[in-house]
Image 1 (cartoon, rainbow, N blue to C red):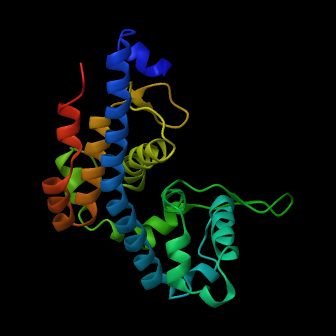
Image 2 (image 1 turned 45 degrees about the horizontal axis):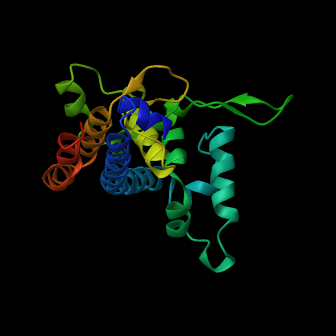
Length: 221
C-alpha cells in the first residue's frame, strides 16, 4: 500500500479509496485495449497474408531473432490438431506485433549473424494495416512512419501490461527503459488514437462506450 499511502499523504481511508480507484482504472483500460489489441493483430496478420500468402509464418520474410523466437514459441504451444493460421495468430501476444514495428534486430549466431530490417516489412505491407494512420499523423502535425506508429503502440502496450500485472496507475507509469512517467489520460488517448488509425468506426464506438474518462473524473481526493 506504500504507493497509495504516499499518494494519499498517509491518509489511510483515502489510500484504500485510491487502491479501489486504481483497480477500476485498470479494468476500464483493459476493456478498451482488449478490443484494440485484437484489431491490431488481425489487421497486421491480414496484410502479411496478402503480401506473403496464407502461410507467411513459414516463409523467410525478414523477421529478426526475437520475433522468430516468439513465433516458434506460439507454434510449439499449439496441439497438433490446432496448428492452423487462425490458432497461431490468436496465440501470438501483443508484444509480437509490436516487435514487428520495431527497427529489427539480429538473426542467428556468429559467424552466421545478420541484421534484419523490419523497415522492409513496414514498407512492403504493414503500413497498410493502419488504414487511417496517415490522416491521424497529419492531424498531429507529423509524418506517418513506422517509428511514429511504434510510439503509439508502445504506450498502449505498456499500459496493457501494467494493468494486466496489477501495477498501480495512481502515480502514472513509465515506458520501458524510461524515467519519465505518463498519465492514465495519455494512455487512454493513445488507445483511442490507435483505434482511429485502424478503423474510424471502431474509434467512434470506443469513444462512446469507454468508461475511462468517468473513472478519471471520479478520482478520490
